[in-house]
Length: 206
Length: 206
DNA sequence: TGGAATAGACATACCGGTTGGTATGTTGTA
DNA sequence: TACAACATACCAACCGGTATGTCTATTCCA
Image (cartoon, rainbow over all chains, first blue to last red; front, side, top):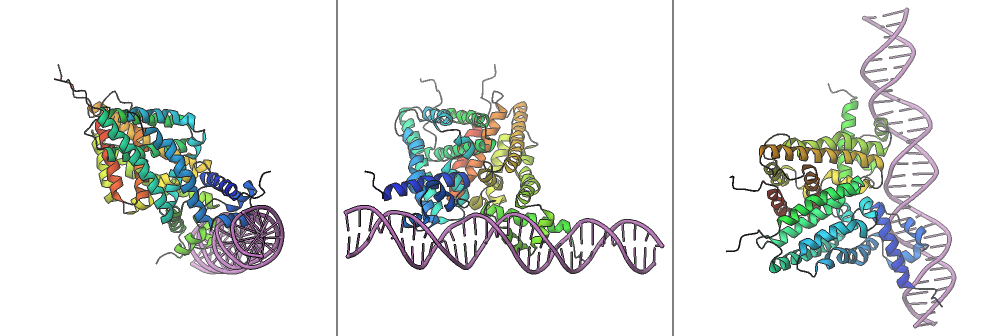
C-alpha cells in the first residue's frame, strides 16, 4: 500500500518542520533535535538528505520561503491596471489571510534577513534575490499602472518599489513587536497616504 | 593611581562588550564566554554584576540602546518648525554619522525587536516602550509642524508617525540585507516623496 | 589613630545539559 | 546484489550557570 520508504515525503516533512522551527526561534537557535523530535525522523535520515544545518536552512529559503513569498506578494500584482489599489487590498487582507502568526512572528523572509544577512553570505544572497524579485514585481506593476494612467508617470517606479517593500517589512516588524493589530492598522494609514500620493495629479484638461 | 577595583567601570565594560556581541550575533547566539574573553573580565565578576544572561540583555537595552536611540532619533526632532525637513536631514546624515556598520548590522533596537519580541516578554516590553517613545517624539514634532504651518493639518500625526517609524526601520533593514548604500538611497527617495506629500496643500488664498 | 571585622568585588574551577556532527550498522527496493 | 534510505550510538565542543575561595576597600570600635 503506502511505501515504507518515501524519500521525497521525508524531505518535505523535514523542510516543513525546519521552516517552523526557524520561524519561531531563528536559524541559529533552531535545534535539529527539536525538528527530529517533532517529525519522528531520525538524525541519520536528516543527514542523508542535507549535508549540514546550513544546507537545510538554504533549502528552507529556496524551496519554501521564496515560493511562499512570491505567491503571496508578487503574483497578485502581475495583472490589473491599478497596482495602488491592489497593494491596499493586500495590506487590508493580510491580517485575515495569514493567521495571527503574522503579528507575533512577523515575515519569515525578513526574520532571516535581519538575523543572517550579516553572518552568512549564502543566506544573504538567497534572501537578496528574493527581495530583488519582490521589488521588481512591484516596480513592473507600478509601470503598468503608469501606462494605464492610474499612477503618476513622473514617479521613479524602481525607487518607489524599493520604498514600498521597505515600508511593508517595517510595518510588519513594528506590528510584530507590539503584538497587536492596532499598530499595524495605524501604519497602514500612512501607507495608504503614500500610495494615494502616487496618483496622477488631477490637472484640468484644456 | 588607578583604583585596582572599579565596579562602575567593570559594569560599563561588560555592558559595552555585551552590546557589541549582541549587535553582531543576536541575543540568543551571543556568547558570555566571548564577552569575557574580549574584556578580560572573569565569569565571577560578570555574575556579580548581573544575575544571568537575560538581565545582562535587559541592561543593554535600558542603559545603552534606549538612550542611544533617543539621542539619535528623537532629540533632533524636539525643536524646530519644519519636522519634515528635519527628518530628511536625519536620513541623509545617517550614513555618514553612523559608521558603515549601519548598512551591515542594521539598527540595534530593531534587531533585538525582531529576534526577541516573540520569545521573551521582558525584551518585548522594553523595546516596545522605546519604540513608543520614538513614535510619540515624531508625532509631537509633526503636530508642532502643523501649528507652524509646515505640515498639512488634516494629517493624523500619531498614525503618520507610526508609519514613519516603520518605514525607517524597514529602510535600514532592507539596506542591511543588500549591504550597499544604493538600496538605502533608493528607499530614501520614496521616503522623501512621502514626506513631501504631508505638506499643506497650496490653496490660493482668497 | 590603629587594627580587627565586614562586605563588596572579584577569581578559579567545575558542572550538567545541549549543540551540530559522525561513524557504523541495518533495511527496503529496484 | 547493489545502492539508496534510513536507524542507532556516540562524540567533542560549547553553553549558561554555580560553588567556593580570595582579595581589598571601608567601617566601626577601642
